[in-house]
Amino acid sequence: MSHDHLIEKTLSSKTIYEGKIIDLTVQTVQLPNGKEAQREVVLHPGAVTVLAITADDTILLVKQFRKPTERVLIETPAGKLERGENPLESAKRELEEETGYQAKEWKHLASFYTSPGFADELMHAYVATGLTLKQQNLDDDEFLDVLEVTAEEAQQMVTDGQIYDAKTLACVYWWLRERALQGKA
Amino acid sequence: MSHDHLIEKTLSSKTIYEGKIIDLTVQTVQLPNGKEAQREVVLHPGAVTVLAITADDTILLVKQFRKPTERVLIETPAGKLERGENPLESAKRELEEETGYQAKEWKHLASFYTSPGFADELMHAYVATGLTLKQQNLDDDEFLDVLEVTAEEAQQMVTDGQIYDAKTLACVYWWLRERALQGKA
Image (cartoon, rainbow over all chains, first blue to last red; front, side, top):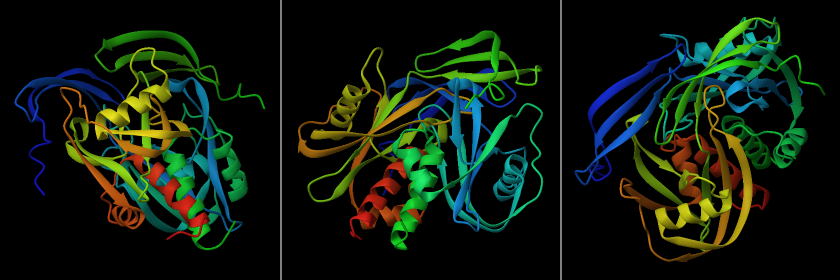
């Protein structure tokens, strides 16, 4: 089906800021009805996240202060893509850096935009199993705690509103649904 | 448990851009180890999204071009909070504007950050049932198609990678899991 009645064309684009992680542009676009509008667009290199399931049927989560939110968040291990980095390699790197674990089996779960209204960040989510503990190796400016939670605990954390991160909710709901289909609690 | 070993303190903040939807600041922070770092922070007014379930056991999705991604996305109806607007009122407004539906029952599903690494956007997700069709009333610069999909179709769209939006995946996985718990396909 044609999407011509939905598409906006870029007429011009102005770079407002070029940063360490994000750039900001303001674009003038032509709407499907011919009129013009402005779009504020944050450019991001993309990111990965990992739902790591242990042999004990628990998942690894990280607790981390996130400056933009001014809160400590509980999240699936995640990080941004380095320049030219393959998403799966990035996921393996981030899991090991943040939690110290390596995984034998990797499966692509989904790729998704996190904030399509104002940013182009595309996140790739993987399921990792067959875990072996190696060594945590955080970035210089990274501080986090690793948690290991059961399905019951994850469910409780979702219900209680202790998990308030989109990618983590998507991964946890996916996991709980897989378990429900398998007849697990 | 204390989070002092995770917290970053703001030493200074510089406003780079004040836009129509987002602002951009660059903050100098003191890390837990006493060192300094820069954080790029996008400020956003917050947003809502609605998982609207019809009497036919289908959900309403909208197909929309998202300029930052340069792609047409399939999403749960969503929008940003107007100044001072209550999230539930915003959800009711967005559902009706985008799809033409009003709902009798509203339930808070979850609230979550969409991109906590670089933005403070907090999104509130609701489940809406008891739907009645009124009239679609899009913003001047908004163009979208409304879809109505069954659980089987939603599952297929997720598996095929036709849904690549974080909030929508979280809502759809949640719905599919609720159905699995109820013994529905």
